[in-house]
Image (tube, rainbow over all chains, first blue to last red; front, side, top):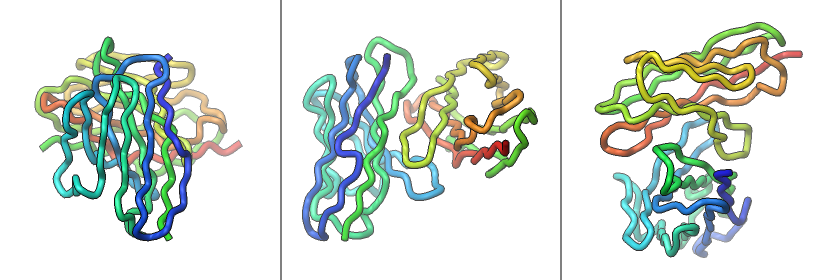
Length: 116
Length: 109
């Protein structure tokens, strides 16, 4: 149980284009999903928290107009990196909290984004 | 400010050589302390949640313990497949989860 998927697992895009990453909870409903960014040999940095049906809450320093988050249903959240630049290249990981559970977050496998 | 510090940064052990990883934390209103395992290029895999000082949890060769200031992840007789980065995280009353930088564990056969 508590499986979270992400799609795509990796993507290469050209500078200036936009990329959408999907995060799905497969066997549970998630009222809250989280988006993290991770650089090599660094820990996870929380970018934003999204609640189903409401606007995402962004962490300080994260541009909300650049990283668009939509939590359209209890099983799906999307992150769109708009006008991507090489410095946006990173490993993006989502997590979800079971609405019936306690405080554990279950993580997706991550998406490797490379902007050329 | 909530903070998590993990030590050591990296640890190399021989197969069968038991050891412990440390996670020191400061948090306002602890709701939970979490241990995750992360393999290269993958998302973190949930291992344990500890809620209060004195609590212990076990899973195969891993045992997690918690005090008011730190948590230990004890690994007993590790195998090469236990090699990974182990992440500690805490959640306080502000509901945010703060991660440590992790301990890279390498078990030599």
